Image (cartoon, rainbow, N blue to C red; front, top):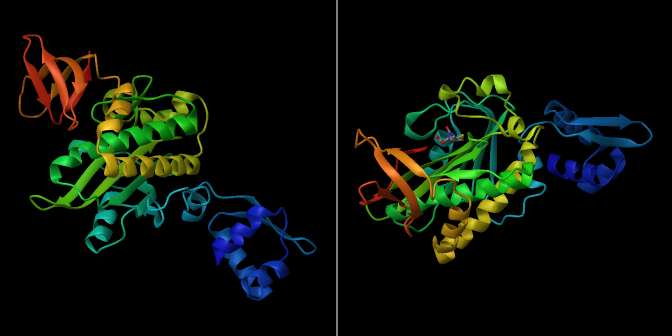
Length: 322
Ligand code: BTN
C-alpha cells in the first residue's frame, strides 16, 4: 500500500487524500495513517488541507521502494530485504538461501556490526556511509567455475561506480576496486556446494560511498578510501545500488549464456594488474610469487611470468603492485 502511495506522490506535486483513497480503495483516514508510517520511515511529506500531500524528500536510506523505483532487472533485486542494523548481510543471505529463497534476492543493510572481507578481515560498515549488500545466486555451475564469479562481479561494480560518480576505477586482481591507489569497494564470494554442484552462492559487495575520511583512515595500512573522498562530492547510494544491480544482471546473464569469454576482455581492459610487476602472497608460499602479471586465462587464473622465466598460474592471493 505504501509503495502505491509513494508511486502516486512521485508523479504529482500534490495529491489529495481523497484521490489517494479512491485510487487505493481505502478511506482518507487510512491514507493519513500510511502517510504517518512513511514519515516515521524518514520520508519528508508535506500536507495541506487544500492540496493534500506532497513528497519533499525521500530518506537517505537504501529502502526497497527507493531502489525498485529505477531498477531495470528481471531477477536481481526483485526481492530486496532491508535492515537498519545487521551482523553481516552474508550471514542473513546464507540463512535465507538455505531455506530456499529465490535467486536474485538482495539483503542490504545500513550498517553491519560484523561485516567481513576476504581472508577473515573486518569490513568496516558505518551507517549511511556505504553500501553493504549480498545477492543470492543459484547458477548452474561447478565449484571450479565460481572462480569467475568475483571477477564478473568486479566488472559490474566498476561500471556502476563509473556511472554513479563519473570516476573510472581500476580492478586489482581478483576484484578490489581501486581509485587513486586506494580500495573503494570489495567483493566476497561464499558458497554452499557439493563436489560437482554449487547449491547457492552469496555474493557480497561492499562499497565505501560517502564514508568520511576520518573513518576510512582507521582501515589498517591506509589502503582504503571512499568514493566521495576520491571524487570530491557525495554520491547517491540509491542510484549506485540501482546501477549495480542493473549492471550485475546484464553481466550475469551474459556469463550464464556465453561463459566468461567476453567478460574476460572487459576485465582485462579495466585492470591495473595486467602488465604490472606484482608480488603475490597466497598463504602457502611464504616467500610469495614475484613477477610480471601478463594475463588472466579462460578460468580467471592470473598468469605471472617469474624473473626466472617460469610461468605461474595463480588461483588466489593478495596482489602487491610494484
Ligand atoms: C573484501 O575483502 O574486499 C570483500 C569485502 C566484502 C564486504 C561486503 S559488505 C556486504 C557483505 N557482507 C559482509 O559481511 N561482507 C560483504
